[in-house]
Image 1 (cartoon, rainbow, N blue to C red):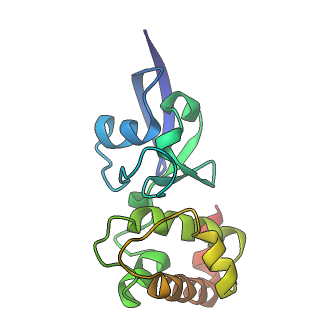
Image 2: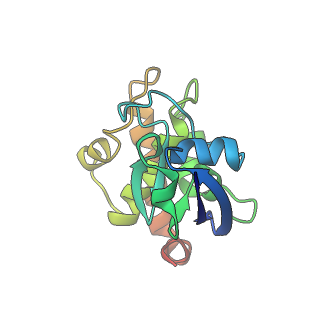
Amino acid sequence: MGHRISVTINGTVHEAEVESRLLLVHFLREVLGLTGTHIGCDTTNCGACTVLLQGRAVKSCTVLAVQADGREVMTVEGLARNGQLHPVQEGFFEKHGLQCGFCTPGMMMSAYALLQQNPNPSEGEIRWGISGNLCRCTGYVNIVEAVKYAAEKMRATPAAAELERS
C-alpha cells in the first residue's frame, strides 16, 4: 500500500504515490528524474546523496520519501538560478574542487548548508562542515579552496546571499 506525498523540490511541488519504504534518494532519481543526487554507499558513510531537507543537510539514502511529505528539499539541481552557477558551483569549477565528480553534488550541498549557517568559515570549520562527505580523488585541498571561494563571493554580493535565505 502506498502513500500520497507532496514535496517541494527546488521550489516546485511534486506529488506522487510512493511505497512506505522508498528512500528519498530513489524518489529523487527514479521517480522525478533528478539524477544529480548520487547513490554511493546506502549507509550514510559517503555523503554523495546529500540534499537539504528544510534547509538542513541530510543524507537522502537514509531518509524515507514519506518523511519529506509537506517539506522542502533542495538538490544540487536547485543551486543554479536563471542559468547562473551558484558561487559554490563556480568555486568547485574555478578551484578545481573535483576530479571524478562522484562526490561533488553531495559535497556542494554540504558546503552550501555550511555557508548558510556560517558565511565566513575558517579552514577548520570548512573541513568540519564537509566531514560527512568522502572524496576518494582530491585530497580535499581544492574542495576547501572551492568553499573559501564561494564564501568570499557570497560575502562580496550580499544581495545574492540575501536571495539565498528567502
